Length: 513
Ligand SMILES: [Zn+2]
Image 1 (cartoon, helix red, strand yellow):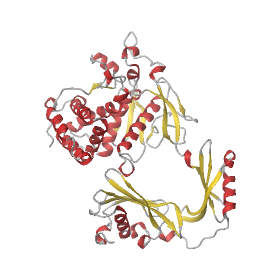
Image 2: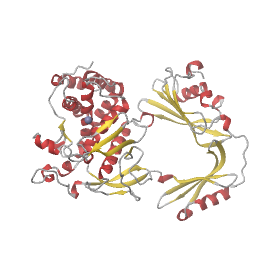
Image 3: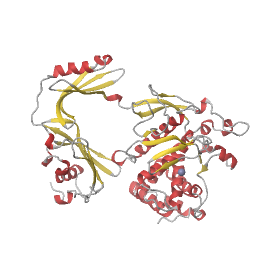
Image 4: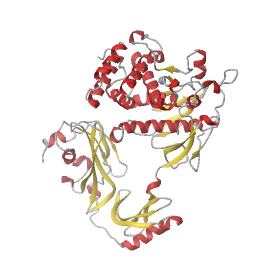
């Protein structure tokens, strides 16, 4: 089947970006292009596209050895994954994936195939199946030798730039549940790799404020000394939580977030990080837990896989300044928290406000360069924090953010309850002050978003607000932001909330442009 002529599918040199793999000299990832729209099944489009680019990826004409393994649908794209085999045996981690939008336009390829020139045409197998299973079992740590062999099959295993025929032996054990995969060179019996498949990411335990001690106690006065200074929160202000996705380094580094830039990082060999606020490391636990949870939530909304907003764990320095200030640096793509007054990273809402800046910058690089865009940045950060935590705060704190981090400031400005900012302002765009403070102006935007959430419910509002950022730019304005939200509603919900949104923008004197 030919969808369109081949020439339109072929990537032209210089019309795309790529990174090369270390071993094979072929591109590991190719992006920065978009083919023409095409109708047809995604699997057919993927095959057609690859067939037109066999030279680039050094795969065989006709895609010999490549077989479609999975077709995954995400919110706005389709991802076709092809596995590589050679002489009827699969190649360990050999795959290529083709990613296309809903109009069939390919925009990304990820490639881990072994180039055709490196595929061996001869191989030798001296180890038989039973001997392989015996050896595999013996290669395990002593305690695990009682594991049951579930399967043993021959596969190709890459060793540097060469493929070796190997036995892949799968062994399992109950209580504790383990699944060992052992790869043995089929010629020499040499152990090429063995690992417990179920122990790749580990789970730790930590103590956190969720989001902060004021909301946990429901009354800020319990946290003040007679001289109106903040006191150490009592044990009841803490919650014990699981720290998910940690790597095995013993530090707070994982799939989604890492405190790696922090000086004198906390370490724990057994994954227990049960620290109080006055102990070193507590702020790292706070940041790890809350950033990880917020990013998992974005993934639940649909921003995962090829649609993931972050490609790498977000790096965080939890005590990078002695000032009462925190920031996101677009240059370093890193979050920094200050320790002045109450440590900023002791408040989950401050953490998520800063993460809001990182989310905007990840979607829309250089966000916040005009007065209005900067105000939208602050407003979004407050909205994101308030929206994420609302359901676990007492009702009287719903409309307030950072009631711990901003406690002393809130007391002196006599807001009730005390907090850094509120989301229920009645201000409209006519109150926007040119050259004014972006946090003050931002209150107009956060109140608008907050009203959208009240009208549309949390998941709908969060989704269209995040989605709207994909069409914004660094110099955006309130009116374009409003249009982007209406567009996102049309794309995701067929415009079902158009009237409700239009009413809110009208009341706020923002005309969707
Ligand atoms: Zn901010």
